[in-house]
Amino acid sequence: MSDMHCPPPLCTERVGGVVTVYGEVDVASRDLFAAVVRAVVEEAAALEALGGDAYLDLAGVGFIDVSGARVLVTAAAQLAPGLELVVKHPPAILVWTVRTCWGHVPGLRFEEPRGHRFARRSTRRAYATGRTMLPDVRVVK
Picture 1 (cartoon, one colour):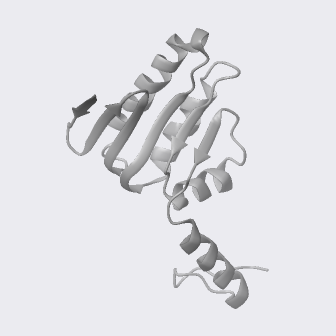
Picture 2 (cartoon, rainbow, N blue to C red):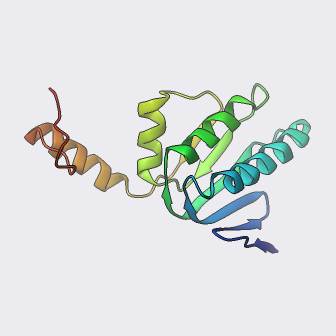
């Protein structure tokens, strides 16, 4: 059974123990995204005795900026030892942003990232040519 909740600009759907988020996560929707993540984490903490992790599916997220990444990192830091915030289907840019800005984040696990082939290909091209997709940014070898 599914439970859909749609306050603009984000929609959430709960199927079993996984909450799927749809929409875009940026400064305008950060607080709403933080509330969704907080609810998922609190539910996992309440079910800690059953050994459950917190599951969040970002398959429906078309864009997420660093403020959304910060929400996930903060939530993972607040988890009890042994629990994880499992982010399914994250955009590849989110995985790259978290790993670049925060490195390994204990309690935060990404599963099945989307767009990873493009991210790897563009990164290889940038290192090979010294150019990125941004005209004012150069790769320093």
